[in-house]
Length: 53
Image (tube, rainbow, N blue to C red; front, side, top):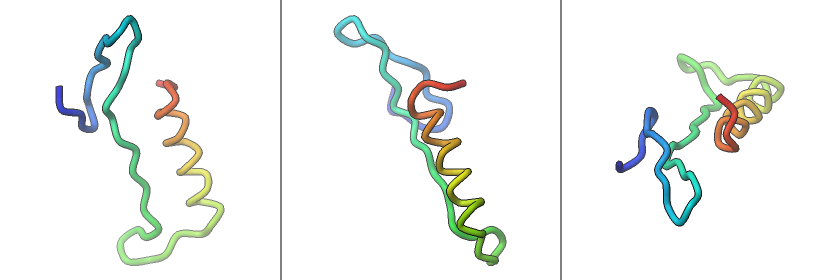
């Protein structure tokens, strides 16, 4: 299990771990996104990194 967008959880030392990676961008089709949109997207991806489905 090398990680990636659909990586499954692995059990190590009695705890579940994930090698998933969250990624956001500041542009969409060459247009800059608003800071509010970037912050909301970052918070969303951070939630996934902390275990939210």
